[in-house]
Image 1 (spheres, one colour):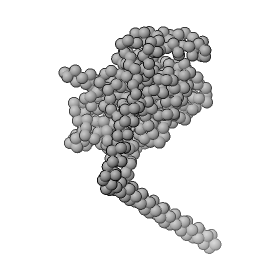
Image 2 (tube, one colour; image 1 turned 90 degrees about the vertical axis):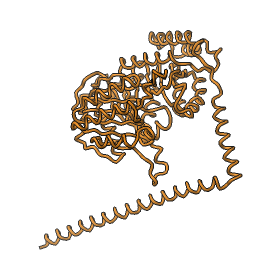
Image 3 (tube, helix red, strand yellow; image 1 turned 90 degrees about the horizontal axis):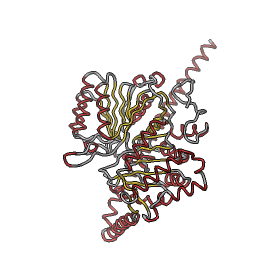
Image 4 (tube, one colour; image 1 turned 120 degrees about the vertical axis):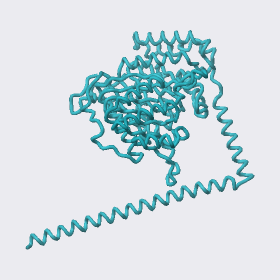
Length: 511
């Protein structure tokens, strides 16, 4: 894809599309949907699992000379957290400006107050995102789920990895590490990661001077990777809109890995439509999750996907925490966003969408390697002995002829995987919906019984919640009224001063 030679040489021209099926209008749609320009001149390295991410992070921090910005959802006071603290403290004591941002809910119970006090005492500026407030009863639902690190305007990291020994496992006890993915970025896109950090830093009550942030146009070009830094904020749904477009544009493959997938109807429909149009759509999710309720909701959403031809796999390791996607061997995504409403709508998230055949090929190979440790979920095991037959048949009637050699290669990979795994790694889908229905039915029946037998048990908490909400709304109304009155006084003051100046000027002119 050629790049613009206009005011910003690092942003590609929408007239030179690179994504599958893209035209100038579609390329413009990608930019508008994601809220992120396509930035060229970058070098990207894929980092698999916690050990690789931690090693790269700590090396970059220890080499810092001017500024370190670190942001993560979960930070625990363990061997990983202590190594991070040691590296940050060392840089702060050597005159480097070090900022550290953690989410209140994510780190709740992970790191002790002493942990944060030691960092602050050493000169690290620490901020906590969105602790509960009495005047915002539901404000805590919005979380900073981003995981980023940027150093000196030279290197940045975007990842799904948090700061915890869980990502390393425990070999002595036979506990494998969590499976996760991150990337290291060098080049002009580092400036956009810095700006994303500054955005949440400001939302947490801090401020970073504009001159402290890198200028994308002044950072050197160090590679050939085109990418978008998608810094999502509550209610914007930038990644959701982009992923919808990618699911629509994919022509051959769309392979997704997600830690906490919960089917969201518009996105599920996009995946189903792609699968029904002969696109090889696969979804890899954890089998054992640290959030069992989310896992139950995830399984409850398998059936419409499977019926449409989407292939669903469950990872057999300790925990699959990666959030990645790869499409058509040309587009790949890595970041913090899960495929659920919390990430799409409620949280601060950050993902990097890359348009580069080499990186997409690497992500595809990683995905296929992960499938070797996964079990495919099928609706009817007997009817799925040759799971690609129905897709191939649809392709013969439709678009298969247009796929060419690449389509035949994908078909060969799918057939080989199906034959090799039909006996060893397949499980028939149960009735996950019935379990969830039974649980919620039990909760509703128990609540009804409590309300009937002990009405005060229900009425008093409900009254307290209603009183809290009412007091909060009244407080906000009073604040808005005071603000409006203050603005009116300022306007009257300015208007009076302006009128006085006009009178004085008129008097002087007459004199």
